[in-house]
Amino acid sequence: MPFGQKSKNRPKRSATDYALWLLGLRGYSETELRNKLTQKLYLNAEIDEAISKLKKHHLIDDKKLAVSWINARDFSRPRSDYFLKMELRKKGISQKDIDQAFLECARDSEISNDNARAIRLVAQYKDRSNIQKKDKYEKKKYLLALLARRGFSYDKAQEVIGEME
Image (cartoon, rainbow, N blue to C red):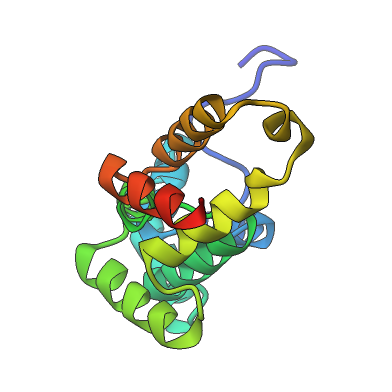
């Protein structure tokens, strides 16, 4: 290999070290971590060994990740249950873990259903100055679009906006 060229065959760090570095940045599901390690050209045996070590030390737990994801989304940008489940499925989390996470969050949180999330979201946006300047029809249209972008059904949005008026 000529001087200055990097070998694309083998990464310098072990798969476990790279996975630990990734987990230091943010939480990853097992599927996401496998994909990242595969992209870095680690062998399947190395990946399996790294994943099993991380699971043994409880550093990878898809259910815990799902619970923290739901809680973070509820706090920062409320979304519908459907939208949250879709995001978690994209992360490679199993349906069983997703369902258990939603049950756990429902017990821990006062905001445990779509209706409460939608009401909180509308309340956050309703008093903004750009919305206050709009007439009743435009305000309703804006809030319906807001809820639709966040994954709430049209019926749920109509119901919540009707309650708020």
